[in-house]
Amino acid sequence: MTDLGALAPERTSLGLSLSADGLVVVGQSGSISGDRAFRWTSSGGMVGLGTLSPGDVSSIANGTNADGSVVVGFSFGFPSLTLRAFRWTSAAGMQDLGVLPGFVNAEATCVSADGVVVAGTCSNTPGVTGPAFIWTAGGGMVELESLTPSAPSTRPMAMTADGSTIVGTSSSGFGNRAFRWTPGLGTQSLGTLPGDTSSEAFGVSADGRTVVGRSSGVGNSAFLWNLTLGMVDLRAQLVTLGTDMSDWGDLVEARAVSADGSVIAGTGVYKGVTQAFVIRGYPACVPIISAQPEDQSVCAASTVSVGISASGQAPLSYRWQLEDPQTPGGWLTLFDGPLFLDGVSQISVSIVGAFAGFDSVVSFTPAAGGRLSAIEGRRVRCQISSNCQGRTSREALLRVCVADLTCDAQVDLADFVPFVEGYNVFLCDEPAMPVSCPADLNRDGSVDNADFLIFVAAYNDFLCP
Image (cartoon, rainbow, N blue to C red; front, top):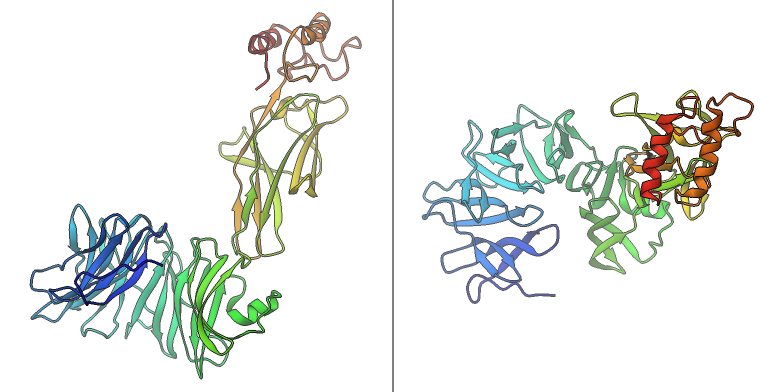
């Protein structure tokens, strides 16, 4: 644990946010000039960020971006007694973000990972929440839809890394509600736990599909929300998943969730004492790929296999796809059974689970009289889906060394002998042609000079790619 200190002796300080790597902390500290927003690093210590105007009474930093280079918050003016939202960078200092029409106060509460998108709230009275806003350099400040447009009271608390999803609390006709905003769906209420009267959202995963916060009624309960489950009591959900919660009483609130949704932090009652908690290994809504498909290189007469391993909310489904060169950006979904790609090469596809250390494996095998030439240079990928989200793997490149007729990973004189045998016969459908016409390297039905050029190029390279 590191003491971050303060901007002046015998003053207090509050750490309110930190960068993605934890190397930059921002918040508010007392100073000889009053309370000031600060930015702390291990190398530079705590540095005050000042105020928007020299006469301002105080400032506070509510959030920072992924690398800590952008800080957002508000500066409190005097004698106007108004709040003004700011965005700070080392190059430009504090920038006034303005205010929505009809309001006098603005406070920035969170910022995207790249520092481009800022969200916050406006009001006419400090301490009273009004409509929320989104700010960008190009678009300026734009009002965020509230659950009750006629009497907007919305406070953003967190946003996804790209700024496309914002969560927080907004007043509705039935009390405060946790909300989730996206450009396509607008501001949506996440509801409350059964019997409760209000809720607040404090954290959101990187994909915006997992939200955590607090639902309140007679007491407070931590909640988790996702597209499949809706809002559920976090403690009850952990019990359902088989977690031993015998020493834990109520989980009061969940304040933050990791990018992949697998780590949740908050406050609960442990053996009768209020304690902070961290939950690790929660089944992530977004599947986590632990072993990506890898590039493969084989000869045309052998079998090539590609595997993948992943974890996430069960059940997970795996859909393998092969690049379709006939359609730009197109992909062919693979199934068990024969696969015809060029009208000549028949390939058998096999998809199995839990094999050779992988959770799912797709294999391509030349059928009787066939070869793998048709998949040379194509890419294969896997789409993994859970109940609430999907993820696409990296694209693995399939290289088929068509001139390696002896399947020894090199093209040499041993391969030249069967090539010449096919070259002398010429047509693949001739009875004298060896089975599967292996020397027809371009699969056009004959062994001719075009195939010879392919062979020579591979022969000069010697080793297969």
